[in-house]
Image (tube, one colour):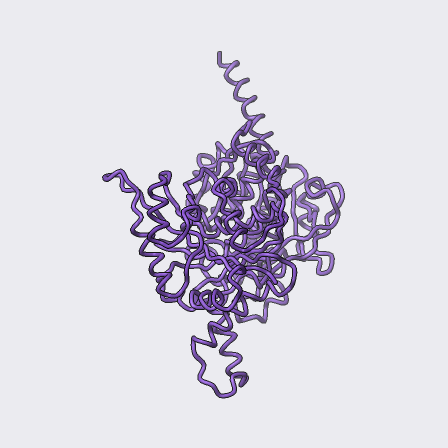
Length: 548
C-alpha cells in the first residue's frame, strides 16, 4: 500500500504549494523512495485546455495527451519522470463522472449528494495512482485556499481519508504565509493561526506547517505557531523567499521536511539523500561564466506563467552552458517594420512563442524576418514555426498573401492549414492533436546535430499544420523540412541551412525539459546565442579601434 501526503494552502493563493510539493517529492526520490505528485484543482472546467493563459497560466500537456495544470510541469522538471491524465483532477471532471454515473443508473435511485457521492469520487481518484504498486508515496496538492467554497469537498475527502486510512499512512502539510509588517518590524502569526483553525473546523488536522516568509522565523515565533496550531515545534518549517525555485529542495532538506514526513509515515529504511547532480546544477546556475539576452516574442507576456515551461527550459539550458539567460519580453503587437531594429537590435537570440488567434501575428512575422535577414539565432515553437513559414512564403517565395487559415480562412495561399482530421471537430475541449508523437529526423541537418538521433518523440498541442502542397516550393528556395512524422508526413521541424541557427518546431519541446535532462534544442539555441554575442563583442571592438 502506498502512503499519502496532502498539501493544502491557507491565507492567500500563489504561495507555492506546487514548489513545496515538488521539492518534498525530490527529497524523497533522492532517498530512493518511489514518489509521484498529483494536483486536484477546485475549478469547474474539466481541464485547463479551454482556459485563457491570462486566467490560469500555461496549459501543460502530458505524454498521454492530457491538458493539465502548469504545476505538473514543476513535478516533471523536479522529478524527471512523466505524469499522466491521472495526475490532474478538477471539480469539473469529478462532477462529470458522477453525473454520467447517475444517468447510467449506477446509484440505484439514490439521491446524489456532495457527501457521499462527490467525496467518494474524489477519494477514489486520490487513491487511484497508489493502487498501481508503482509508488511508495503519493503527494497530493490541493489547489485553492482553505476557506474557499469550491475547496470544501476536497478538504472533506481528506478528512475522511485521515479517518479511514491507518494513522501512519497519511500526512497533511499546510502551507501558510507569515507576513512581515515593516512598520512594526515583526512577523505576524495570526493569519496562520486563523488558517489552521479554519482547516481544523473542517475536521482536518495538519501534521506539518510550512511558513512562507520574507524574514527568518525566530525560535519564539516557531514555538508560538506550534502552540496555537497544535503541532510539534520541529514540524514548523521555514520557507524563506529564494532567488530561484530550484533552491527550495535544498532549503527544505535543511529544515528536515522530508525526515519529519518519513517519521510520521513510519518509513525507516532509507539511504542519505543523493542530490549531487542537483547541487551541481545549482552551482552552475549561481555562477555563470557568460550572459546572453534572448527576446521572447509573445502576446501573453504580462503574465509570466503563460510561458512557464519555456522560461524554465531557458534556466536549464543556461546552466548547461554555464550562461545566464536574460529574457527580454517583447509584446508582438508592439513590433512594426519601422521599430523592429530598435526593439530587437540588442538581442543575442529570438524565440517566437506559441499561441492562438490573430492578435499580434504581423508583429511575430516581422520579428522572424528581422532574425532571418540579420543572421540572429532564431527558434520558433508551434505558432512560432508557422510564422516562420508564412514569413518565408511572403518574402522569399513571393507569395504575398500567404497566411494561415486560422487567422484568414479565405487566404488564397494557405501555407498553414487546418489538419484534415480536425475539420469536422466542433467540440473544443481536449480535441487538438495532443500528447507525444514520433518525429523522424533527416541526416546532415541542424536538427540531427541537436538531437543526435534519427527518431525522437515530442509533445504536441495544435490544430493547424504546414501545408505539404507547398513543401517542394519551400525546399527549392532553401527552407527544408528536417523532421516529419513518419506515419502522416506532417512537417515537425523546419530550418534554414544557410543561417547560423534558424529552426522552428511544430511540437512543444519545452514540455520535456528538466533539471537533469535539459531540452537539446534550448541547449543548442543558447550555445548559438553565446557565439552570436561573442562575435558581436569582437565586431564592436574592431569598430572602436578603427574609430580611434
